[in-house]
Image (tube, rainbow, N blue to C red; front, side, top):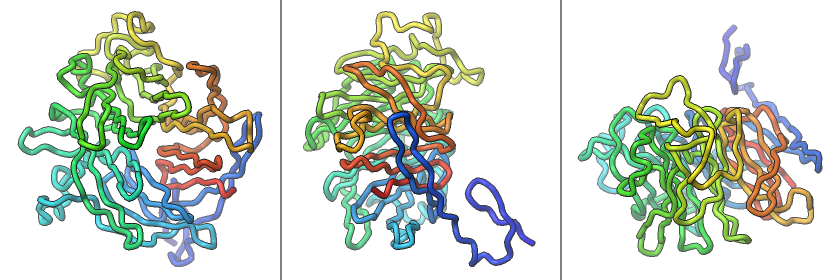
Length: 390
């Protein structure tokens, strides 16, 4: 008898061909109603922290792994996810293919070492923007970059078009790859992008206006010009959402111990890191000079709209649209708690978030999208894809 890996555990079997993932359905359950959610295993494996996905229509999806592998997929008639094409990994002209084939963390387009890698994607028409860590060989350090790729959906291909933005300065090792930020969202029009940049676990640079560390960057996609929009961020690696109805930019941020935040980002405002936080330091901290003398306060800085204590590993955020299906959810946010393995519904009142209701448990949700019909699509760190059929 042999033991074969499956999902998060192992089971015994001698015929690999008979290993068919079990179809599962769970409930997204709120005091304001329930919805059925389909759960399936992805037909490929991703590394932690996993990469993003895009919806291509007609039950077709594009997945990009942490290390830049590209998979075009669809939900078939059996409601299983199948790969329609394993496309070429993310690359750009000028990279030595022989070097890429070595698999070295420092070679190729995506710097994929430990917790670094592809952080987000954003599809606009036939242009796919991808945020990822890359290695600057001349400066001998890592940067967060955004590049534009042309999507050819008919032939299932991505082709590099141009670089859009790269953070400054290059960061020497060691740094924490899950604190680089890298979330993207369009603003009030399709020519404006916001990009979150974390502190790379180098907090001393956050309050320095000469660095991109700990900043919200506003990018003009027409000419790739960029400016610092807000500052004082620690690890805005969870989620970013722009509410065009109210002209509001919402950001979720991993704080120190007990300091996870949801922020309403306003132009020119400073959110205080590393000078203030409602949390305290992890015992493992020490990759820079953390101040902490005014912790458990946000005095003299912009205060968060909501704080989680204890931290939940706050993740992706999406607004529930006006669909007529559930008036109680309309205008509120759904927010992933990755460390808590749950999904929360959060009631919004003006510029405040007033409560958080767990509506789905036991799933570490890395990426979340809600379409205009109120259907949920979610990718987990455990190679699962969750979606709502109706």
